[in-house]
Image (cartoon, rainbow, N blue to C red; front, side, top):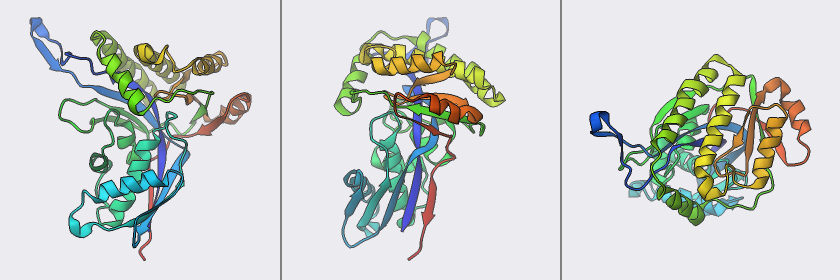
Length: 326
């Protein structure tokens, strides 16, 4: 039996959207420039609410617990990539999992947790998250959850060029232990996944290329966010994080109707900022809203949020794996 406890993922924003016929940056002396990498982004792995799955050999395939059917299908897809003599059925149980499609990267973490457990059971415990994700088709756009699954921390990934399955890891930084993250869940009916998400990206891809927007986002990350994180300056980090997230939201405005995914999300961000919190924004398409705060203030700040569901989390060091030999 193998049990995997996986973190969740906050997505602060993408660095570059794929735009039709925009494949190279402007080059020197009027020549064709360097190739464009699509997507890329910044995010943080967090410990709560978390996700846990358990896998063990069985006589036939079963999937139990919340999203147990989806977890079993992921395990079957992974097993089908193995040599025939290693293929066997498993009992898959999802012990804990948040609601899907709320900005916490549940799909990727569920997929990686399940296939990691099966990989351990089939003698492939040395396969890393990138290999596991490639085998079950995760990381199509963002690879933050893939790279952060094992290592945790704040992740910067550099985007994909044509032919690359998974965006490469550029930077992984340990999040300060004396910082905490408040998470809020405004009421929101938007379902930004599946066909609707693909249609949104297709619409955005038809817009005019905006190299300056990507260059600005990269500047905020490299010259503001990461230095502030390295020096433990929460105020400067919060300002950079909020600006980065808001600028990404403005790029997505034609698809989601504004800087944030709904009026309720925009109001939540506004209220948290008005309360003096700096590092506030929307994770992925929402509706989860995050705010980075001093750990010593987290409990007090959480009590102040009494009108919408909210909870406290901390940066995660990555997945935990336990294996019992029968």
